[in-house]
Image (cartoon, rainbow, N blue to C red):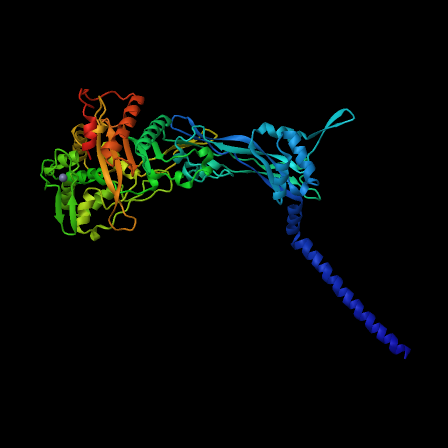
Amino acid sequence: MGSGKRGFINKRTIGLSVGFALLFAAIAGKLVFIQLCRADQFAKWAEFIRLRRMPIPASRGSIYDRTGRPLALSIETASIYANRREIKDLALTARQVASTIGGDPKTYRQKIEQSKTIAWLVKNVDPRLGDPINRGYRVVEHGKVRFVRIDGVGVQRDTKRVYPAGAAAAHILGFTNFYGTGLEGAEFVMQDVLRGRDGVLLAELDARRRIIAETKKIIREPRSGRDVYLTIDLTIQHIAEQALARVAHTYHPQSACAIVLGANGDVLALANYPTFDPNNALEVPASKWRNRAVADLYEPGSTLKAVTVAAGLNEGISPNAIMARCTGHERLKGGGLPCSLHHPFEAGHGCVNMPKIIRHSCNIGAAHIAMRLGPEKLRGYEKAFGLLDRTEAGFGCEAVGRLAPADRWPLIQLADIGFGQGIAVTPLQMACVYATVANGGVYVQPKVVREIRGSDGGVCRPLRLTPPRRVVSKQAASLLTRMLVRCVEEGTGKNARIKGRTIAGKTGSAQIPNPNGRGYLSGAFVASFMGFAPANKPRLVIAVVVNRPQGSHYGATVAAPVFREIAEKALWYYKVPSDAPAKPDIRRNQDADRKRLV
Ligand SMILES: [Zn+2]
């Protein structure tokens, strides 16, 4: 009996011992495994719990105009925060902050209460405001002054983006968000260049996960962003914006833009109406941010006749050849061709050659050049002049011209395209057409960024530009230039004349297509003027587009005076000498002209 019981105990003891031994072996094995194989991982976890990595913001690069005038800068600021987890008494902390830096304790308390972790008590203020917070709350005890740290409240070094020129060049510059990321314009397009690389700060945390100040250590220094120099000339930009503000005041258009290009493709100015101040961009409707000069398509109307005529001349059509006999209206298969007639051409423009088509803006004549060329050839020239591709000038958000493939053009569409309808382009693309004529028939890609400079002084060219390409012969460009000069001197472009200057230019008054795709909106027009000066040795190419002006819809009345104002002031600013003998009668009959011209 006894031995049997002993045998049972023995068996149980042995079973337990084996069990313990196995368990021990498993634990030991696990420990060895952890020590040998997963030590790194555990060390990282421990570090993660004990250490905190914090970014040191890199200072953002600045943006300047071509002469080095600052357009966008980052200034140092301080932001004061409260960490709710570290605050024992909300009311006390709020009172201490208010008595240290001023302000209302109730507001501070609300801000802390509304946040689960970090609340920004004040953001982007004078960096000197951070000093009293760092020093602490002032306490007087037994006649002695001492400072105590305010629980959970600290100062973070910060930067704020400012635009010293205010609303000037707003659409070119764009703006950044609260965190310094570019949202629009150059701030957006050049984000990678401007932002630099943030540094890293490492600090240890105590048991309550608060930063131990003495342990802060920089493990990577921040690298500043590089500076961007634009091709914009702030003075020309101001001139363009003033002229645009004046036309907006007189004709209350829905929108308007003006572009000034240098002969080498540099965008010297690009102004839009309506506009905004990038210093408080987020407070205005987003529609005001739109850079309409590159983002909006419009039907160019008569200004496009320059392409049709250039193509005709380049294809060997003689400038003296009669292209059509205009009676004011012509029937074609699929529709009618109207000509806009004004005194003394009430009965039509008569027999028209290319100079007359440009001078009096004859639609029927331009349509006949287009029909003579045929759809393939005409479309080829639209493409060569850059109307079917983005300019890639560096603005971002650029629209691309729209034109159906040539094999799908009915005859009436071919005729319409000849005088600028049935094709949609951006104002910048049209400016490039006139720049090509000004450059003797060579297309030069426009650009808005001149160079990028690093904080080490290194300079680099930012954009890979496509090489200039010949679009039409030098002779065709110079013949067209002479026609455009006569258009300004004695044709529809008279309101762009400047005493002592030769100006080449063309008006446009185009209908606006109905968004439903059927026909055109009644009473809605785009008035425009494109040209360059001085005509013989062009320095400036200027494009003005006014969308839905009230009171008049003629390019000659609405847009040509804007061109004149910009050209006159800009040529004077660049000290370009006069190149034409002054004519005494230049503005004598201007009011009569205004009523009459297209
Ligand atoms: Zn006509």
